[in-house]
Amino acid sequence: HQAHPFFGAQQQGITTPRPAVGMLASFDVLATDQAGLERLLRTLTERIAFLTQGGTYEQRDPRYPPVDSGILGPSIDPDGLTITLSVGASLFDDRFGLDAVKPRHLQRMVAFSNDALDADRCHGDISLQFCANTEGTTIHALRDIIKNTPGMLMLRWKQEGTVPVMAPRSDGSTESARNYLGFRDGTANPPADNSGLMQKVVWVDDSNQEPEWARNGSYQAVRIIRNFVERWDRTPLQEQEAIFGRRRDSGAPMHGGIEHDLPVYDNDPDGKVTPLDSHIRLANPRTHGSERNLILRRPFNYSNGVEANGQLDMGLLFIAYQADLEAGFITVQKRLDGEPLEEYIKPVGGGYFFTLPGVQAGDYLGSSML
Ligand code: HEM
Image (cartoon, rainbow, N blue to C red; front, side, top):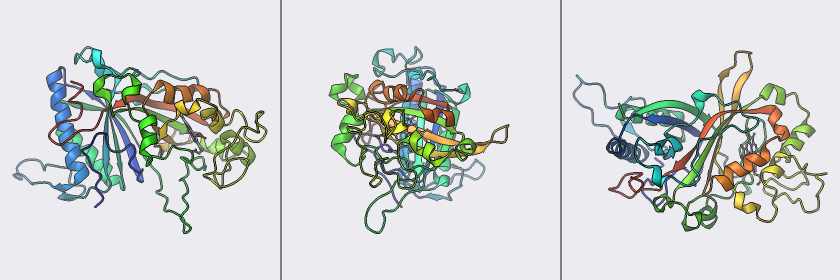
């Protein structure tokens, strides 16, 4: 019966520990004026508050459709559900008169050099990130929201993913789950339970020169990144490790140790141990000042089906949060442009969103923006 608090200064689902199941759904807003947008935000707030805390649906007159999909039964368990509401740059176009309050770095995602973006899986006025212990809970929540927003919201695309939750080992040490390329993923993430660090890395505050209302919000970067797993599985282990810059089995740095030992590059200026173009060294060179580019990653592995050529359609639903989209995701991705890993990955979708600040009881998400 695990319920995460919904009311608070910041939204849930960002620094909340990542559960096994995730889904990112992107929507277009059908409302055409600010009053309609307010109605939508009030409805979303009310549904998220109910779904994440759980409860019982009151069945109405059987001559009407049931109040919910019923897939969890009449009573719903919170099941660790978090729902995180974010808005895209397109919400600040002339429909709602919000141009003047747009977050400073919010922009439409443009393709990076290795991207093959599929227009049907990009952008959106609103994103909802659903995370829970089981898939039935995220699907139920999505269907509840769709049912309660007729004429207000239209689904544009969605991507689901999963990741095993790793129990601590018997000696108390922790290990990160693996992605579909077989490597531990999340090792060097800034720890989400360090609230001082999260204040710098993730949450917008006075230092970010954002509109007043945006404080305690965050930028959400979403990327659907396909992995060419058949090709990867035929690649020598030493090449795989050189591409990431870590050991596959342990997740340790190339110079040895255990997974959570930090990589040290000072005595390796030519990249003889950890290649200069390895994924981790490009993503975070650990040079003076590069801590400004830290991001909080919260990815899920996805497995969708089969491509027309018989290849598996699987990869990484990459989701990252940061207080400054330019200094965070965009800078890191530009450094990664051209990395050797590109031979095995293809970003096909996603978008940039701004995660609204949290909400107090009686208020609604986004009220300070309107
Ligand atoms: C680290 C995999 C995409 C940013 C890592 C690690 C792996 C990995 C295995 C090392 C373990 C760890 O610290 O988590 C992948 C895969 C990707 C992908 C398979 C695509 C399918 C990205 C993207 C970004 C990114 C798009 C951001 C633009 C980072 C960062 C680190 C990292 C910042 C930590 C580096 C450090 O601090 O040492 N990734 N990654 N990754 N990745 Fe990725």
